[in-house]
Length: 202
Image (cartoon, rainbow, N blue to C red; front, side):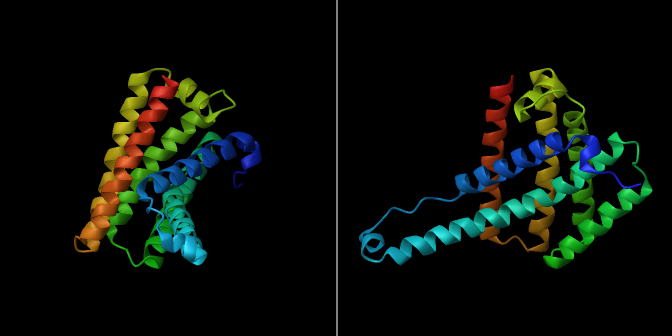
């Protein structure tokens, strides 16, 4: 029988996913360099609107890419919490990752494997959060990891997995310098925001 959010605590599931989406939005906003408002923005208001729409599109796109493995991972965690984890869940994850990467023209066996490693790490993390007590994301982290050092270990592990995904993407794109610059900026923003969470919780 397939798992349902209601049976694992819909509020907690949504709380975790909402926090991850907010994290992705903050990363994108941190990467976007605010352009100085010139006279053209006052004389031609449409320039400001176009700039605003571009930023909104960037946020949506990054959030979609950021959330894809996380949605798979929390579904795996929810299934495991209900004792429904099995080969079918793993197969579903592999097929979903393959289809998603093919739709982005970024398929390679190595990149699929890098994503599966990332999903495994995330699903273990989400399982901790789903089984912890708390009504805020930070409280779930505090109860799940209990000590600053434990959460720091998770951050190091997830960062290494994310960096490997980025490396595989760069290999497929032939080392495009603009893409690489954007990835580095994203990695810096992710590190900054995870440090903030670490300091707030512990």
